[in-house]
Image (cartoon, rainbow, N blue to C red; front, side, top):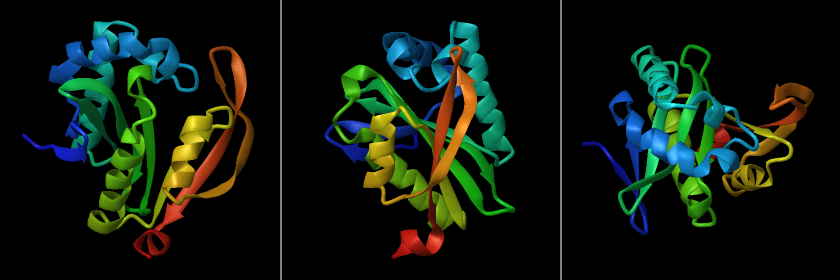
Length: 180
């Protein structure tokens, strides 16, 4: 089985449809926390929804347009990182993340996202990796800063989440910046 150590008993592993029950249990533990800023938790509102979400990412992996990875801490799924979108032809990918409350403050997302960005640039030849985040999501913005990403700008009132219009910050890193 593939995994990458994140240190301190944490591992990064592919998250696949056969793990839907474990994924759904994880989402249930952190549903409100995860769902504050992203629709990810709302998409997995039941076991079938969780399975469908993981299947969408399995389909994206098969077409090389996205991927999803879980973060396990002491063999318990606590969050993850993903390529929401990948456009290999254009050399562009978008990284995203989520984490349940009990796993915050341990640097797990920063370490996992660093692995994804490094792989996208060094192995897949991506020229630009993006990090799109609600302007109200301070922890995710802090991760973008720790990763050395550049804030490109703000898309004002970009999308609606749970009935509220949200500004979306766009952060990115270009391959030459990452490699230096």
